[in-house]
Length: 346
Image (tube, rainbow, N blue to C red):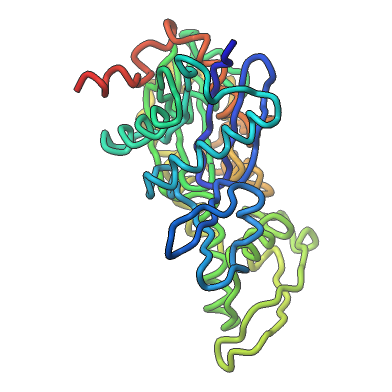
C-alpha cells in the first residue's frame, strides 16, 4: 500500500515524514544543474557540497526562497528526485496507481499564487491529493501541543527562509505574522558584517558555520564568548585572508534580524485575545525550526516578553512531523487546511 507523506518544503532543509516509518529523509533543499542545458546533476547533500565550488557551467541553487517556490520547474524536479531517493531506500511512492496523499507545510500568509505553485508541484509528482498546512500549526503538532483544545498555544517557528509566529487554539491559527527573516538572513547579516568590519568576503557556507559554532543571540558576560578563525578574500587586494571572529561579533551582526523577530513576537502577543494570553503565560512559548537553535535565542525572547520560552526537542523536524500527524486529523483541522480540490475546481 502507498504511504501518505508529510513534507516540510523548507528553504534550507527538505524533510519527508510518514506515520508508519517516521522521518525518512532530511537533506538540504539544494539542486545542482548545468547552467546551459538545465540538466540536473545532483540534489540534497550531494548538491549542497557543490555550493561555491562548482565550475562555471554548473550551478547549485535553492529553488525555494524565503519559504516559497522561486523556481517552479526546479522545485518539481527536486521533489521528484527526493521521492525517488526514498523509493530506492524501500519506500515505493512513485509509480503507484492513484498516487499518494501529501500534506505540505508552508509559511503563514503566503499568497494565493504561491499556494497554487506548491499544489502544482505536488500534483506533478504523483500526488493523489495535496493539502497545505501553515508551518506554525504543523510545528505545534510536531512539538506535541494539543492544538485542537480550546487553549492558547504560541509557536515561534524560525526556519531557513521565514519566521512564523502564531497563536493557536481549537485547531486553527488565531493570530499570526510571517517574516521573510530567518536563518538565511542570519547568514547574510554575518557576511555583510565581516565585509563592513574587516573588508573580508566570505561565502554563505562559511557564514553558516560561524553562526553554528560561535553564534549566539546574547551572552551574559564576555567569558562566554567563543572565537574561530575564518578564511575569506581580502577585498582590498583580492588575496586570501584569515581573521578571528568571536561570539560578540556575531551578536552584533545578528542584532537587526533578531530584533525584527522579537518585535514581531511582541506584536502577535499584543493582538492576542486576553484569555489566550493568559494561557500562553501559563504554558510558555515554544520555539521550533533550525533558527531557534541559535544559542540563547530562547533567553532573548524570554527577557523581552516576560514569558517562559522553551525550544522543542525536535525543533528542526517539528514541521515535518506535524505534517505527517495532520494527515490523520483532516476532519478536525478542517478550514485550517488548503486542499488541491479547491484549486483544481477553479
